[in-house]
Amino acid sequence: MRQKLILSGLRAYMQTLFLLSSERGAEKVLHFFSKPLIRKIRKRDAESLQTATQKLMSIGEGREVMTYRWGAGARGVLCVHGWESNAGNFGGFVAPFIEKGFSVFAFDAPAHGYSPGKTTNIFQYKDAIETLLRNHPEIDTIVSHSFGSAASIYALTELKDHRIKKLAMLTVPDRMLDFLNQFFMILNLSARQQELVLKKFESRFGFPISYFSSARAVGELSVAIQVLHDRYEKILPFSDSERVVAGARDARLEVLENVGHYRMLWEDAVVGKVVAFVM
Image (tube, rainbow, N blue to C red):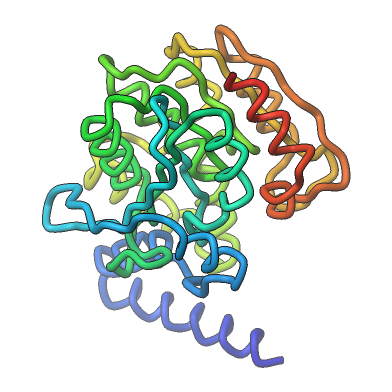
């Protein structure tokens, strides 16, 4: 009942904003779309982060992210977390990679984990990835989860001189527009209001939201790709990963069962598949 009242109030608020100013209404929709709602760090994730060397890192335009490093191996792997998650999600990967001679790097995206900020987007994820790759040339591998996978693909298409040889993605969303459409449904926006938001997105970021398709962008990458996805999970459609693999030059799909969207990050069998691929 409480959630229904909150949703009803939010919808009424948005309709009032659009009535007063279509510009303000569209702006507020993008603000909410860019605002992660979950910042709580679970005990297991927090314990993993406490074992890392932590450092705030500037990613430009006055923004900072908290970064993490485990180990001192000659090769580096960068872990990129998903939306409303944090770097501690990859705690299960740390020891196995260190044992294989890797240093493990990660960051909390803006407005996530221990990083400051209230909003973020794929461009800021890209800035964090780019900065870490520039600061640590030993990184030759990326392991990502969910939205972090889409952000990693976008980052690598933008960074033409990167050293990444392998990209392991634990699920990967395809079209950002699908998520925005879901958001439109939640807010009960009209077709005209949706059009205004899409125009606002393009004018602000310089791209139509349809540009952000992992299945399209992945074809530009000359890296070996592994995608792991539970065919029965409820968060991201399995078909998204299928489209991305089909669009890649060199990719394989590991079909998983009964490991879910988040639990897979701590499953020994899943971690083992990723480490074996990276080696």
